[in-house]
Length: 122
Length: 471
Image (cartoon, rainbow over all chains, first blue to last red):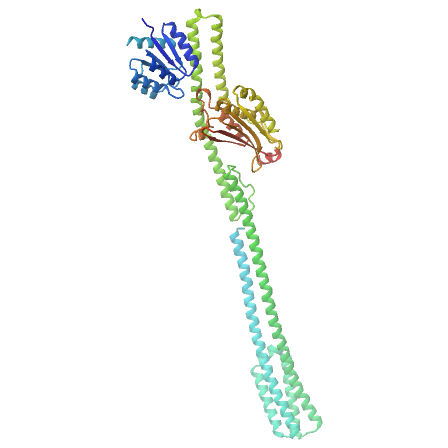
């Protein structure tokens, strides 16, 4: 069986590195991006099972990523993490069919559990 | 005294003067008329006396006895007419003179009666008669010339009074006008200066209000307005401060979230992978944690700098030394970023009172911003010069970077406003702005998208004594 593919987008390099290290322990194939533009380009080429994206980023932000992914690639689940956890953002993300929503600081165990649920639901 | 009262008093003074002139002129005119009446009477007397003397001559030349009756008749007529205007004559010549005239007339009549009685035509009686007639004529002549003199005197006097009072009125009007206008102009100047200083944001008041007039009231009203404006501005600043505390708190919270998250993820991963990590890996993890705490420290330090701007420690400093120091500090960064730089210093600039460290911080901050705004191969120009009005020293830092969009320009000095995304705290310019303001200077920005940005700091030139005087 092929490894599940996870994409992580966050403009904080440490987030990308730690997520990659930790998720690879679970046997996922992880690819990280510091901003959304190359990430969306990559999605055109390759199919990913789960996209974990930060909300606030320069240029294309997490909400744009969520909307683009859910419309163009309905098979791919999106998990959003944000430093600004407010109700408006959460509601907007829910309406755009986000799989899960984490405020920073993120608990990696919870993130892993959420990814598992996302893969199980497929 | 109020200006209105002063003008009224001066007007009343001039009015009284004019009334006095009119009354005096009127009185003099009356006097002239009376005197003319006297001259008329004297003329009449003179005519009568002349006629009498003519009759005398007729009597002596032609021995015409009727001439004596004629004289008698004329004397009676004269006495009668003197009686009718007795009061006027008394006024004109005085009681004594009138008595003398009557005596003379009686003498004259006596001589005529003697001649008539004794039919005495000898030379002695003729001489007596002539002497009496001459006296009468002299009398009337004297009165006439005296009255003429008096009339001339009165007219001359009137002319003099008119001339002098005109001078007095003119001079009083000029002096009062000058004094009042000078007073108004002085007060106006003080008011103008106050209004100008208020418009520049210095809410001073005029301390010693010397006058209690309308200008004094205007100054009082202006002072009140100035104090009110000062209070309002303080309130405004206070509410702005409160608002920015809100912004700052939110900003700090957000700024701290990312490093906190990073440390949290580093720790979680470290625990998870502890056994698999080599010694070097573990050290690297901890170095990363340390790096993130440095980042947090920087955020908090900036926040403290912003929330508690230190009072500048003013010392007499050559600004060019500070500019050169900042330039030297930034040399390495400029070299790494491959940025061409040009320093243009005006060596003739006067020394100014500044907090060297704070100004150095501002210049370094502006150069850092300029470097970060540019790709490699950019250019940076740093210049120090005297402002056009020679009241400020201007330091400008110009770059050939991407520029700032016009809609963002009004916000660049706001706390936590950044065009650098995650790379900037949004506090650098805000802190710089605070420092320059506490030096009573200005920091301005001029930018063109795609062409570059110029930041200009203007620091006031003043001597310490003057500054202490102004408080």
